[in-house]
Image (cartoon, rainbow, N blue to C red; front, side):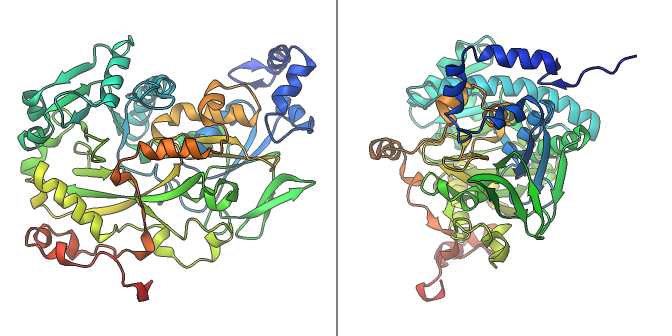
Length: 517
């Protein structure tokens, strides 16, 4: 029997793929115009590499990194992933027990690119359902739970964002039967009377839910290993140190152990660390730590919070930023807040080597949250979930975002740095795109047309007017992030219910004295 031809790009033979690529560029002028959109201008060898095999180095193994690695490998490329911590990385935002999976993105008038995001998530959810089957079969654990997502509002009429999301999904075949308007009675049945008394209106999308993101990333890493993707993991071996450049092109990276690694393209997908590795992102993306708390639920209360009885919920997100999840298999209930978060001076240093030399180890993998964040959560719970507020907080976490100035991802070649690409700016909503985002990044690295990149994710520098417009849409809790290193972190005593209920927590200082900074 003859050996079958090598396959690239979803099963095409190399010859068929070559013909399809050639036809897509019908004239030399069209070929040239596509090429000049990227930093590979004047480098036709890049296209020859694409037609054969590229060596791609990926720094980071979270949502963007691991999904892109799989997409590129399926297209026949040689891929190596660098990660300084075991996967899923301890300080990666995607290493979590719950992430919201919902296609509710409003329309384009309420959220830039809302309809495109909606379409992407609808496709991603189809794949999450398949991933769930795979994780159940392989690990005996569900990774996607369609418990429904509630969007609750203070006012009788839904906010423009919620209303536009509801109407947009009603127009889709997949979701029109999953959408239901909620009144006080229905809200109380789902989330309790105390919650419904304050947030009596809204809707539920019963075909949305949450994913065990840590399990999904673990599964993707296993699939990547099985696919033959190379991994370099370790505090020194997997640690990015600096770039290797030749003739104005990035041709590789050096790692913390002093070794040099060469490739035809380098992708930085290092989450909140990305702006420190790609200084060109300064002012465009910034890392913020978002505080998260968990409760261990007593056995006699578990039934109320299981996914079949208790959905994912958003408490008028445009006004409060609070959201939460049903009980996990580990009997944990998670509360989160999407807001300005806390800036870290450690993350924002522009020298890449600072990752290795700085001593702020508590910030790298901090499992504590600022004391004032505990007060914020307790004050919310006191009103809306008073029974839960009587429990001690079992653990806390800082979830590190990489916030883009407009909330849209940055997936592109880095201007003026031929051979260097970024996939970042997750802005707290990237994980739900894990099953589909890798193909978008791969298209960009291959310089293929991609409407999501061209419309939403390309490199962009805002005008003053654009930034002012985005800032004008932010609520007060989304503005004026504080610097994490100036805050007093919560200790074990601060997490006890009694400390708050007796008023002691509220009297404790929240920030370090100026002389202690």
